[in-house]
Image (tube, rainbow, N blue to C red; front, side):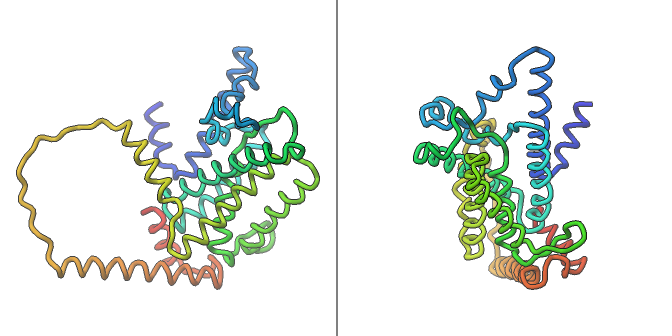
Length: 289
């Protein structure tokens, strides 16, 4: 049973794995509270992002962990639903590694905006409150794809809507809600995530990946937990590569990139649905690389 679950989990893409982890945490915390009589708020307290700098310094991990806890069924349902659909579109464009960059940079920057806003404008935020929920990361992914392929159309109930319309709608909702005084801290974190998604997409379009340093940091942390296996020393004769082989590889990579750019231009001008089945399959395969 455990092996089967592990296998099924390994087949999920990174967005689906994050969704599964969020749902698991949501269920387990409530089961623990119900079965053992524990206070749910006490459990969440150790992982939520506090408003003050001093409490944050005492639990710095909360700048990430707050995104894995939710206040109620509606809260987690809408966040995970949005993450599922935006994740599918994102993975057709880029790799899972880039998705991790956008999502977690959105979570972190959204948390930073929340902390700074509370301490600069304390009158704006609720007292004795803390931040939980994946909304900042989800918003970052949403605004990223809305910025990168703004004219791609998706079906919403009975009609098609361009992605940039959806992005503008969600940002305006957060701005209006701030003015209305509803969950101001959460709305500010959404806008922080939105900014990262927009900025990441714009810089990536110009050839700069702002998440490269974050990826390298994650690799360094991952390497700390890997066993350092020393292989026995041996002499190996390595045949030098020929210039013709190098030229062939360079040509293939350049041709591959040109095809990707052509498809992305087509999406930007006519929407995702204008692609042929072959082009969609090719783009999906590239997103998995």
